[in-house]
Structure formats: structure tokens, C-alpha cells
Length: 172
Image (cartoon, rainbow, N blue to C red; front, side, top):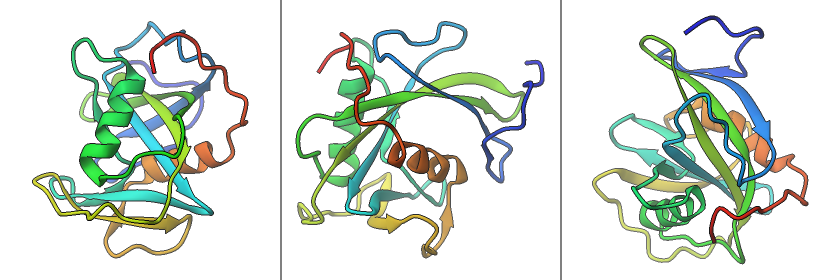
């Protein structure tokens, strides 16, 4: 992949980069790279819900792969519930598409970012095979362990996103 015209928004220790963020319509995904991923920034006051991934050994936003036949919105809601046992109060709101350049080789792909509001009342979280812990994180406060910088940047973007993002027809 060719170099991007501007510096990345965030880069992690493995060389993965968040190279751009495209706010816009949920029903108009970019077509220049695959969209296999959906992420959720669930907020409670000034804190966002983070999950500690056992395999990557860092704190990240809940989310994951979009299953065949599933919309990004459906995947975001499913992953949030599976990983954290939390559900949003009301419907998730689409924020935009994050473009990543993944190491090695700078392979391009997109992730759909959603946001919502939750409660700090835990639904009896139990560590699983993938997620070891969850925590409500106030941006820029230290966490016990590594923080995924790409997800931290996306959390910040979701916090500052306009509240009137168009929903489109990509599912509910």
C-alpha cells in the first residue's frame, strides 16, 4: 500500500496505524478496502467502557469481526454484549468509519465505530476466553497494563462526535 498523504492519527507498538476517520452515513461504507470490524465506545458520564484482551494483552474498545449476514451495527451490539455483558441504554449511534493500515505490509481495512450510553451497573461480568476484565476508563488516566492507542483515539473521537449523525438503512 502506498504511503498516506498525512501522518497517522495513532500507531501501536506492532506498527498498526489508524490512518484516517470518516464521519458520515452508516449506509455508505467506503468501498476501497474491506469492512470486517465493528467497535463500540460505550460511555457512562465521562468514562468509556474498555475491555482487557487476553491475547493482545491490552485495553481496547469492545468489538470484533462482523459475521456473514450481519450488519456492522448488529456486530457492534453483539460484540459489546458478548465481551462485556453490557448493553447500551437505547440504540447505538453510528459515528463513522476508521481506516487502518495493519502490520505487516500496511494492509488496509475499515472498522465501523458506534457509540452509546451505558450504566456502571455490571451485569455480573465473568472473565472469558478472550476478555479478562472490563473497566470504565476516564480518558488519559492510567490503566493497569497497556492501552491500545488506536482504540484510545477512537474513544476520543466518539466522545466529540456530533449527536445528530445520520442513521441510514444498515440495520438496527
